[in-house]
Image (spheres, rainbow over the protein chains, first blue to last red):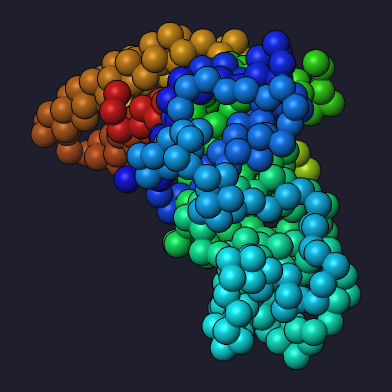
Length: 250
Length: 217
């Protein structure tokens, strides 16, 4: 079943078209990797899936992005509700200047949830799902900045999970991390995909090959090829995909 | 964009080709030693098997190094996998050429026995198949590779006919069982040699087109 359905979607920064006529189905509980050289439109596409580009001046879109059949750009869709359903984790860990506990509880608090028992349960559950609980359970009141980079990134994932999203967008989530922290994030992605639909932007070809079920290759704002990851990385159909993943350009 | 990796892959291609040429020379030498009943030449060919084994190990290690260092994808990955598969078959072909030579040495001790023309004929077809397969590997020519696959049946037919004629002949001349069996083993080795060339040709189709045609042709 498709969680997200993208139909003839284009995105513009002012007059400049950053993405042209993208159409694809993103199945539920799978990992989709977006690859392509810098400036190809993959991050614009990712950020379009939860309307993060709304904050960009002169940004506009055409076409549709359907989440469970509902157009996320329709007036009925409130961006805050949308971002609760489609969570995002960024390249650089960006914890709030709060305690570990409060970082994870933040989303619930702004929803007006005050009950301590509920908050405690959700924080524990989210930290466990983000594979961080065992490392922080005795110091939940410490500042989030006391954590290592890899732990901070998992904290950001826990923060995204706390509001029970359906889709998680990951924008190069391991590019600032060391190999061990990277491996932990990749393991975590494999666990999370049993419950969530995940879309990940990565410049690391091996990471895309390891963690995703399907891969899309973007070039100059165009979706060149989408397919099962094992096929894209062994026998891609389009020579431009092959040239990119084998490092012949980009 | 020229990558250093391309230089490494070209060197790998050259090493696989060199190993292939060595095996081709072994087969040619094996058939020559048979026709000339030259046991010394046969021993010389057998000795070259060590050289081919060493080439296989060295190329295998080279492939593992390239995979570890470059983490290749797509056509680069297919090229290295193809090289690893080709050298495994080449090593077996070298063994089979040596087997032919061992039978040549043994035949010297036997009663005189006419060499059936089918044996050099199979040897020549197998040699041509190998040369074409090596050319197809270098030039990425799938049409040539598929031609090689089709020629395997020519060798199979000759092998089956030879078995039938030798078995029939033995009914009239039971004293020659021993040399006849050695000829049959030789025929079997050449038939297997052509099978390994076919494996090489099939993997070349995978290299170029990404299609697995094993067990389909």
